[in-house]
Figure 1 (cartoon, rainbow, N blue to C red):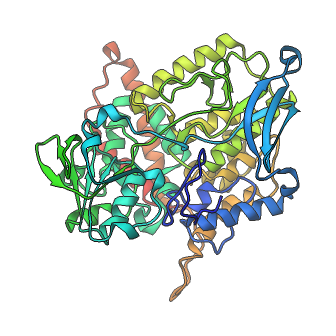
Figure 2: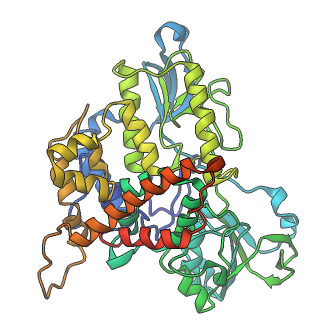
Length: 521
């Protein structure tokens, strides 16, 4: 697939030309292959493709890949119950054939089938202007001087709205539920994911009562600007954020106007829930995708509004033999590439017999429990069913294959490394410190991750930046924070009927929590 092609290929994901990553290079690289130090911190999609080529060449992978081959059908072999093998019908160069494979990994993601529920947009058939799903958007050229409505508040909706706002006459951003918006840039100019995605913050989140953790999360998400003043405040307070550096400024200057959901259409206009009417030329629906696997029978995997019963988002629970795995059918609040890499490491060990799945009953219980926790955090919407906390998830999967960092051992044997692993950004290299697939370069990669982050932007140096060191203030702040949480947690557990008298003081805790996040370390 040519990412710069104007053609949107059937059954394949599509991107627009201006796509940049919303996770930084150190957070999103593969665990044993850091991105080149001269790569920008946030990458254009062409740089991602370049990185994938470098990875494939470095590990000599191209010889194992059969390109230009379509998988038409995946069926269980006649002796599947004993061998776990699969019949794969494929097409290459117009010729079809069936091969037998020992195992199957499904990696086509969940961004192929555009979701556009007609019942949510009554009267759309009456609209005389043009309307498309965001999957078919490539560039802003054809929208010059036009009035455009973008429906949705996901990352694509934010990106497309901002891009259109520079050349369109007016852009309306229609949202039903709103969304938190965060910048790629955090305090001190460091990448937001490297300052937010840390093991100690997730440890604190899991230690605190959910309501207090949610309050702190809300304070952090809204710290950039007051979302209610921009019409973006989400109805569901724990909704995952979108990453966009320019959306607030374009709203401030009037190039983008945020509107509530659309209730109906006329020939040339849309009517919003607040009764306002806008004459528009074009509508772009950034309303997400439906998950589909047309090459698999329904009795192998059943989809229910994007929800599917997979053990830890990877393995079907009720399959006789664990020789089918799904990768990327998850939306972590963090980088997808190292998440999928970890899933692949787990899947291949299960296929080879080096790792075992628990009983069906245990997998059922796990799915029920995790779904309940997830619903409390992210809600019940179709876009939330695949959502998960990144660090919690990689911890969960890494324990399955014995690569979870042993923090006590690391603190006792290598305090400098332990500090970076627990209090620094949770970069993928941490999953190569021990266990199967251990990489000898993991320690160095962790200790030099900030150097590779800063190098592409330090193109004009007046004063040498001293080597990063652990300052006393950050140690005292974090140490005091952890001690206070332990004491207050004990007080909460000792209180009558589980009453926590300190949960109402979310503002002061947010301030302490923010102080602990200030230093990049």
